[in-house]
Image 1 (cartoon, one colour):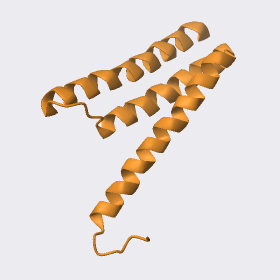
Image 2 (cartoon, helix red, strand yellow; image 1 turned 180 degrees about the horizontal axis):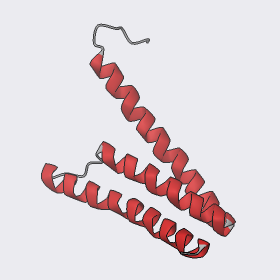
Image 3 (cartoon, helix red, strand yellow; image 1 turned 180 degrees about the vertical axis):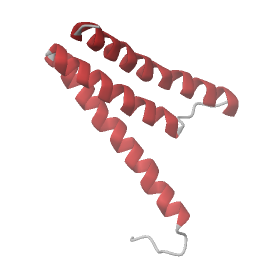
Image 4 (cartoon, helix red, strand yellow; image 1 turned 90 degrees about the vertical axis):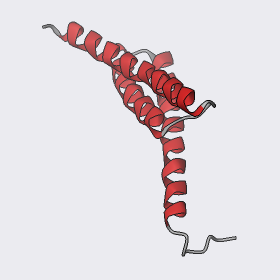
Length: 98
């Protein structure tokens, strides 16, 4: 397998991971009967974003690179908020600063 075929496979893998986040979100929302974003949505977003960013860097596409890098920042920040909130929830004996 040549280098370009491998990079094409990486690009398709990234797109598959990125698209899977919508399936995960849709199934969870159907179960809850309301729009929700499960934690898995953010993990798929990050995995797909990192893979697609790698592909974009390989292709040297500045528009694609900027879009994926910006998205990754947002996905990581959302996951940080989820983890931070969960830690607050798990430690009710500690007082939150006002």
